[in-house]
Structure formats: C-alpha cells, structure tokens
Length: 226
Length: 360
Image (cartoon, rainbow over all chains, first blue to last red; front, top):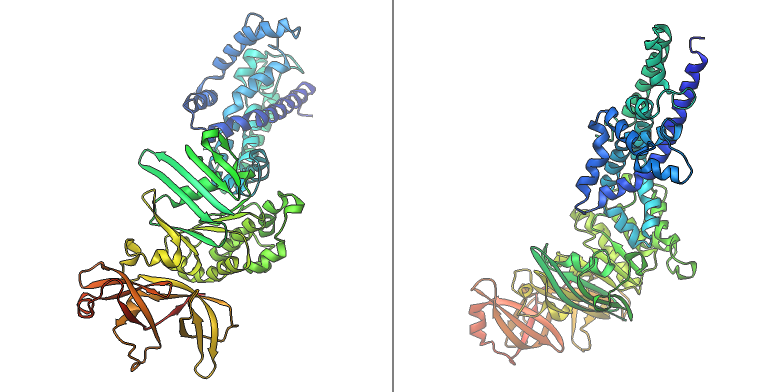
C-alpha cells in the first residue's frame, strides 16, 4: 500500500474540508456575486476588491490576520469565547472559515460573470410574465447561470484542496483535524520520506490536472472565470 | 376602459413629458423616430421603468401614482409585453416559454388556451423545438403567443417587427392583424414604420423628442396638414370602409365610407357584405377637378369640400385637405394646378382617386 493510514486520513480530511467550503461558498458567494453583478452602488468597487484580495495576498498574510481575529485575543475569538464556543483556531471549523475566505474569489468571480452575462432582459421578460424577483431568480437566473455554477464549484473545490499557507497559520498540523494533504506532503518531505511524498504529490498533480481538464473541455477552451 | 398615462422622466440628455389618453380597445400606435421616447413610454406602462413623476391608470386601476408613492411592480400588472427581440428563454423549449407566464396566473384567469395561442400565431408545430433553432419570425411569434398566454388586459408591443427583414415582417403582420381583429385586448404598439401603422393602428400618437405632437384616430391624424406626416411624398389617409356590394363581372368590391353613403370601388376578391376593410388613399393618387368629369379611366370620383391647404415639402407641390362627407382625405397636387383651380377653403370639388390600396 503506497499510501499510509495518516495519508488516507489527510485525503479524507481534505475532501471534507473542500466539500464543506464549496457548499458554504455557493450559499454565501451567490448573493455577493449577484450584488456585484447588478449593483450601481459606489461600494461595488471596494467590495469587489476585498473579495478579490485572496487572489494576490500571500496566504500567510490572510492566515496571520485570521489568527489574530479568531484567536483568543481577537475580537471574533473573544465573542466566540463569550458564547461558550471556545476559539476556532487550530480546529477544523477554523480551517473552514479560512478556506471560505481564501477561496471566495474563485467562486464569486465565475458566478458574477455568469450573472452579468445573463443581463437584465431575461429578468424583465420574467417580470412581464408575472414572475416575482425571487421566482425569476430560481426559474430563470439559476438555470441560465448553470455553467457558471459548475465552474465556480470546481474552482472553489480545487483551490481549497490546494491551500497550504492559510492552513498552516490557523490550523496547524493536527492529525484528523487540520492535517490536510498539502501539510501531510510537507511533513513527509521534512521527515525525508520522499517516497510517500511522491505518492501524495503525484496524486495531487493528477487530481489538479483532471479538474482543469474537465473545466477547460467543458467550456470549449474558455475558462468561465477570467 | 381607457388607458391614461402622464409620465415625466428626466435623463441627463433626454426628457420625456407626455400625457397619453388611449382608447381601451383596438390598436394604439406610438409613432415617432428612434430616440423619441416611445419605448420609455411603453416601459413605464409595464413598470419596467419607473418615471419619477407619473400617473398611470388602466381600466380604472391605478398602476402608478407618484404623488401617493404608489407603484405596482411589473409582475403584478396584468400586461403582456413583446420585446423588439423576441427574448425567449433559451433554457426552455418553445412549450416551456409559452407556459412560463400561463402557469403563473390563477387558473380562473386563464382566458387564452395554449392551443388557441398556437393556432392564432401558427406555432403549433414548434412546441418541442428549442428557441435557438427557430427563425427570427418564428421566435417573434412565440414571443407574442407567450405574452398572450398571460391573458393580459393590455398588450404592449415594442417594435416587434423592427429586428426582422421585410420577408419576415410580412410573415408576421397577418398574425398581428388577426390579434387586432379577434381579440378584445387593447394593444399599444410602437413603431417607426408608417406602413405598419397604416395596417394596424386605429389610434395614432405621434411622439417627437419626448413630447406628444399629436394624437387621435388614425384617419384624422394622418390627414392633418399641421403635422409632418402629411407633407411627404408618401402621405395619405387610412379609411376603414364597409363592404356594400360586389360586382362579379368586373371583380369590383364596393366599399362605403364610414357614416356616409359615398362609396369607392376596388379590384378585390368577394367579401361578405358588411365586413370591414381598411384601405389607404395616397395623397399623390388624388387629383382634383371642378366637375364630375366621367370621361376617364378613373374609377372613383367623390364630391369633396376643401378644408385647408399647405405647401408640401417642395415648393412645386401643395397639399389640400378635403372632407368627403365626414372622411378626411388629402390630395397632393402641383401648385400650378392649385392656382388654376383657385382652391380655397369651403370650395366644392371632385376628387378623382387613381388607386385605392387595400391594407387588410
């Protein structure tokens, strides 16, 4: 067996983290993307920039600030402690929060582009056909934006699988809790276990390639988020 | 039922201020050049645009009253809207498109059935097709049927033919004429094509630069000398006559002018006595004479009275407005002939009509 039990458990944890993150991002990202695609507010620029920040910031910077705010002395950390929840740093929940923020632009941007491409007309048509705004969203926007949702899900999932810096900063390296595949590879290399590192790294490479292959062939060579 | 709309809309480079009073039946055409504000009017009626200062009342129901901050959302207005491009939902089949609005109105308000709408617009064979595989004309017909299936109290059409080539246009016009004849729904129709207006409209509103220049029944409005419509080479009047006789030997249909015993004859297939037929008399096809000279091939001669005259778009021609026992008409004659005849208001003359074009 080329993959050890800790390896498998890291893979399972990564899968869990990426799935949950993607799900949360679709729920949170959809309204944000909708707002960004349609608003004429002056806040559009600043909010769009904040959402896109993880694209350019080193993950360690995001991790550092998350550690500060979520930690025992941070304002969110103090709030969670006051509520009797303890702190979320160095826990799976902390990883999820970090991943949601870190992968946000990869979900919001394809959705925003899909919504923008639909334009106003189908919504006007739906309104003249007696559909309320909510009704129109579910019966017209969602089906028409389906390719955008597929792209957003794939990118959100894949990008979460690939995260390392943020995990290390706020999750640490706790088996079964925060030790995801990328961290596990790092551990193997640190411990000079090159063979194990090879298997895991190779698996990641194949996985990433397959994801991108699916994405690019589905969209006729045009990734939907650029 | 009437449609009343007072709208005031201000954009940086354009302002709209109109007061529309449209009849609650038949086709009202908003006619004017591109950018004159026709579409804005229609969008305000539909609630797709919210004029800052507006009062809209249709059939006794107030849809917008900015003085009371009242605004009925578009999906709560009983309208049908046909866009310039059919704008079908591409994720749905033709049937899905047609049923979209139909499903969303209460069962007891569904006055138009799917098969009726399909029959009326000739799209029954397209039901299982996808919108992307339809021709422009087919798409537009589906768009019209889709709007009809919401059993609207008012059907708004924004240049439904403008995006089509002339062949497709003539493919759809008969369907629109059927809507006009067979439905009791009032239509507000936007167009910048005189030809479409002539064929469809009963009531004409002339809009220019965001203002109403004139409005009234089409026969009267087209004959008004103070409007630019009358001055061009293409000027003419629209008359809706009733069939009163048919001559099978010469294949001539006799048509009575409205509220009059005067009649014109046109070469046309037989039609039931009493049915309505709309025709156009071009101003340039009407010549004037002092006597009922019958020594010519001209078929139609009507006694008329001069009501006014005006120089046409060039100084060689004059437009004379006439009254043929209640029906307004126009004659485009040379200024020379006008002087020779001594045309003056009140003068009794004979109008010789070279041709009568049957429209529908």
